[in-house]
Amino acid sequence: MTTTSVSTQRSPRAHLRQKTAKIARWLHIYLSMVSFTIVLFFAVTGLTLDHEEWFQNAQKTTLMKGDMPLTLLQKPDELRIVEYLRNTNRVHGAAGEVHVDDDQVAVSFKGPGYAADATVARSTGRY
Image 1 (cartoon, rainbow, N blue to C red):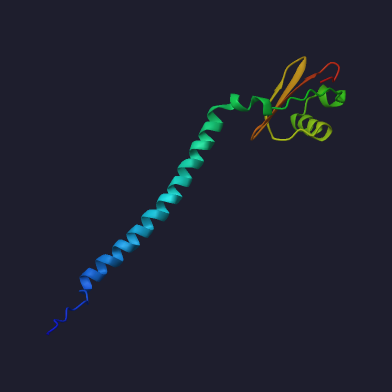
Image 2: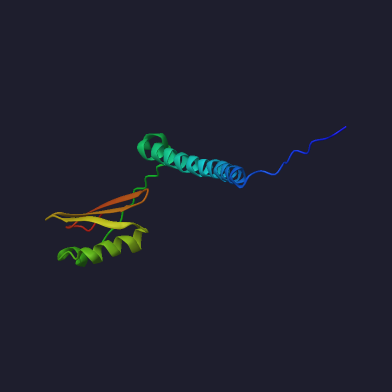
């Protein structure tokens, strides 16, 4: 009985194709997982930003009253008024609009997920 020996050695080209396919499959799997995570993140954040009404119960409203020294209101210095409100009422966020009228001063504070408005009567200093 004669046996014929078949060479199992592959050509370098076939080996390169197999190696390339293996690397491509690995890249496809892991890049797909990372891409899916990124898409899922943007989907969730998009929904939460576009539908604030879903989280209305999470909103906390606090009404604070107090008196501001009339010396701050005689000749309104916006920075001193803002800092007084921050120090006495623990208000935070960037001071947005400061509007000074003859009878009142209005200040808005804005931050991520936070907003505060203060209106101070210039004649009495009450807010």
